[in-house]
Length: 206
Image 1 (spheres, helix red, strand yellow):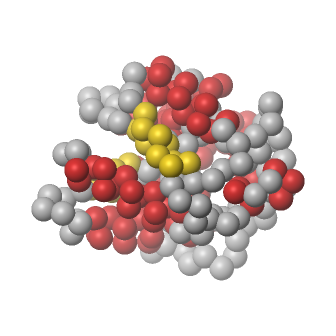
Image 2 (image 1 turned 135 degrees about the vertical axis):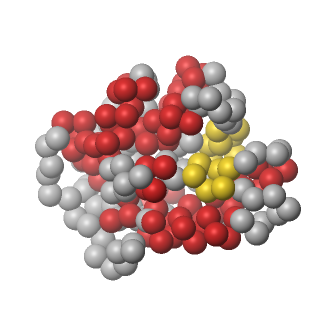
Image 3 (image 1 turned 30 degrees about the vertical axis):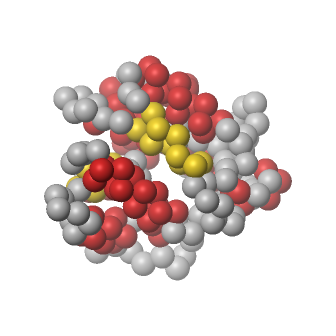
């Protein structure tokens, strides 16, 4: 639960008819806007939020200073989702949960290697052998090919408090409107598609 639009929408989607808990991971982000949003959203949804502090193992623009964050370009945190999914799986195994859910949408694999269908499928297969009972990896927006625009549509249908979500890479009083996260959110919310640089060396999922 990052406090962003995708994870908030996934939370509201899953809590219909299911018992859900959420996990926020502090991996050295330079601001607390994500955590503040995660707390507000989980409070509104009536869902317990766990705050998990991870060792400082990631070195990237998101764990540096705001001035290091480029405008427009995707910021990759190497192997982040493998670490976060593994930590969440450990908790799920010990507390009798059936699955771990991640809010990647089908657009994310274009920019982020650990959000694509191939990576998530491999993680899901590994999780079947992590303990005496199977932990399912749920990534419904990827499995069902729901892109960012589709997530916005679903969020509105579910009554997600979109105004309380935070997507911006920077921790200012207001979203910067220039980073890749802000621009992608703007695309989905308005249908206006500016040109955003993409990472070219990520294999296309089959």
